[in-house]
Length: 252
Ligand code: NAP
Image 1 (cartoon, rainbow, N blue to C red):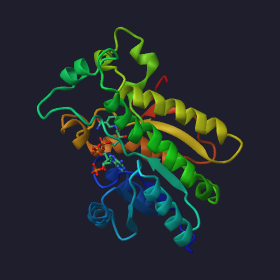
Image 2: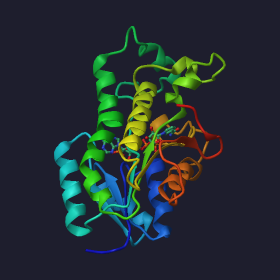
Image 3: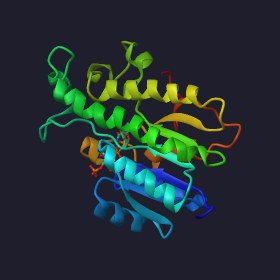
Image 4: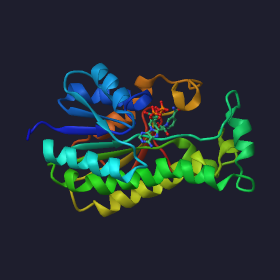
């Protein structure tokens, strides 16, 4: 057992998750690089540094989640930071298809329910399943923090405004999965408000990653910034918020 703080980032083998892992390491954490492929997790952990370690974790696989929690319990006995970062944007967008074209094929009236279920399985139920497995370990840490990596495209308030630029792509698959994640974030924060555990949602902004075929405009360093800030919140920091590094608080 070690006393050093331990951080787990899900889906940390690439993209924003990998950058969050890299940015947490210098703050004295042992960083667990969650990855559904152990091999890719190990390669990423090498990039993060000597205090990083790969952890096989598929957020849609209960056995994988339980094994990851058991390993953390045995080797560390506590978890100080949980960043629920893993997500997918779709399972059926054809190569070369634009987000706008995909949005037209995934309206409430014509979307495949299998597509909705697959994306929500990772982005919503996966987060809840990891939360349930890791909460006993988070309760063992003195000041645990949970950060859910969400997206501005899930904001009901912003999408209700006809002037909102991304409104035309608001639909039941990815955007609504982030709306549901926001709701679950608030529910977690309410559940834990009498404890010292803070739960917040971060919006990275449109970031150049595999998720959007590297079409994003922000760097992964910029995309990781808000999640890292929320992971490092002091005792006076907020809980139950949704925010972006440059825009500040976002409406749910
Ligand atoms: P990314 O590069 O595609 O990374 C996503 C990560 O999630 C990958 O490591 C992926 O693993 C992992 N993942 C997917 N399904 C998983 C599962 N079932 N179990 C465990 N890991 C799984 O995308 P990203 O842009 O960095 O996304 C990170 C977060 O930022 C997501 O929550 C995303 O919704 C959010 N976000 C991104 C943007 C953006 O513009 N990029 C904007 C707003 C919000 P594999 O490598 O095995 O596929």
